[in-house]
Image (cartoon, rainbow, N blue to C red; front, side, top):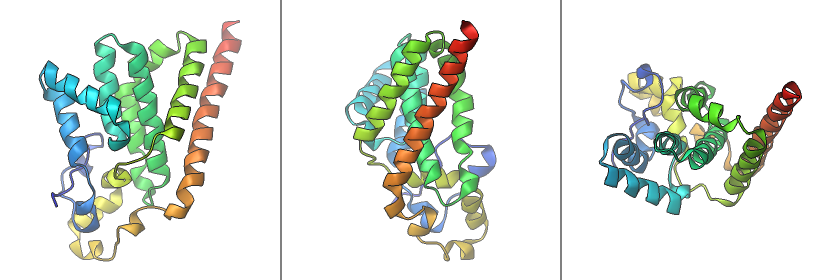
Length: 212
């Protein structure tokens, strides 16, 4: 198995050390290749990745959806860009919520800050469209499987850094210990969706009230 590599969205300190133990078993190869081609590939290679994600989005970790949204936005496909940005955000939030290392969860905020500005400004120019799109994202998330390794986010936490510095510590961790119990995931996923949707409904209601 290849060595896991943190997807490039976190502060540099979490990317400087090679993962060890269970962290080295986290599958990031598909995401890394997609991100490389989206960022550095030829227009045809970028289009190929876009088509692959569109046809099988369940296979790709949230950072890929964020970068995809940026590429689409720059190409003028702003509504689709907004969809994938918020789809990535919702999936990232769920991955953060089921991660057992709370220090890894701010990785979602990092991605939102890096990619969200132009898309947020665009979408919230039309509040009715924004509300419809967010509802669409939530329904898409509910019916679309999660077929990727959700532990990508663990690679951006303090625990991953500590184990890289102390291999003995890595031996005390198991694959299961990196996440909350799987029995809790369905309820947690629905809670994440509900909170995500309600947060946008509240924000849009406030903006509508101000604009009157």
